[in-house]
Image 1 (cartoon, rainbow, N blue to C red):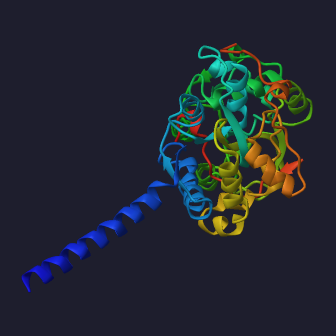
Image 2: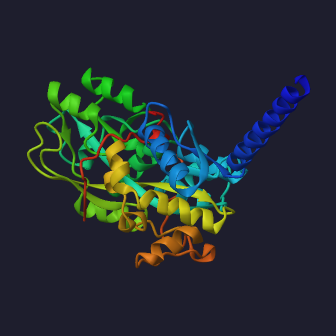
Length: 358
């Protein structure tokens, strides 16, 4: 009797061991990918968590979203092999590809590919001074241009140069977005640049309580910027986006882009791409940024090569993208300056991680 019971127990333990081994083996057999996002308070991190969930559920890949310092860190971590996916601004990834600006010291990297552009990050110049009506009016003013060397910093330089101004023509303040908001409210600065989806909650707050003005970046100024830097697109912030905004505001935008390791398996990247764009409506229910997920928007960044897996997905939807490394980065991609018709959809509030705000 004791032997019979012992035998049954032994068999049960063996079966359970096999079950556990099988389950762990099945889970362990899935590909693992680390996904660099941004700071925990920003859109990159929150949105990255949602996208990681859909890639896990529908691509069969164990994607883990992790908090990082933003675009530059993500690109370098993909280069080092620590991450296989990451968020990157379209302008910053262009710097990386060409070894310019924030990548001038570290040198160029070609170890990543584009999976797809995700949403707009709008260059917004705002002030509480009604006499500042154009970019040229910033001359001699105290202007926040983001942390030195950040993405916002270089965006601000591009806009100033488009108006024929240099950093020495203003009194630059190297402030994070939050510091800029408080300094503007307290009258310690005259204007500030931010790069974020519109509407941005902090600007909405200022507009509601103090009154702010958005300055147009348009006409010849915008034409010169876009001629020099191919990663910008024109964008209109519709009237009514912010309290007291009675007219449309013209500006420029860069894209938040999902990049993937150049060495990633083609079939895997195809499945990752499908997991996102086949489920855009569901993703939108969890994060407003999903409203900008479309194959048209995803393929709007054409200056750098796409991964072949993503390209296959887009080809099935009638869009051809470049996958040739040798044909990339040949457009105007920003100067080595170290100091010297789309419409906002209202998803908003995606503070640019490279400014130190997230």
